[in-house]
Length: 215
Image (tube, rainbow, N blue to C red):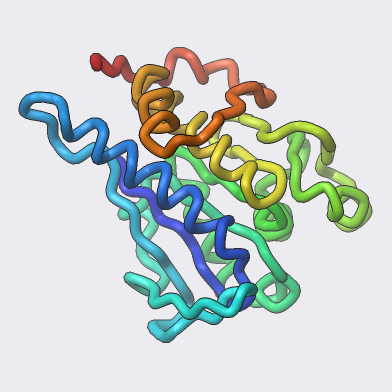
């Protein structure tokens, strides 16, 4: 079983966190149809405090837990939104940096890439973010090669996606990477989502790390 921890914070973009949550939870349901299948993905929301989180769209969301130990997370998803406040929250930034040392994959959606960059996780790597924020991110973090016009970039332990809905494409890619293409395509079909699987894969070990999924 892979544990999927998704960070939320005030002014988080709703689809940035709910899109990946839907992908992994749907993949778990599709996988569960197999005979004697065990739970494949377990999703949970993480915040720095146990209180209602006010999203950018006005929805209020309750986290499942506060900043958990790194051993409890296999895949960490860092969404975006208005990150101006959380970008200057050292408790969250330091926690993200610590998770990356132990998680299999640390991934960002949209402006969540700014949080990974602030945590020092993108130095020397290619990354992407929302198209409106490409120039700002490149200026703020010159050690990162920020690329436009790609839905996601896989650098192995670090994966970034473009804005909002691109996080769904990235999450389906991560399902493919962790559990195989058959499950990823079946998940997209179950969601009635037209998946764009063609991002940029810079991970030399990506193919070898995939687990076979028998439909």
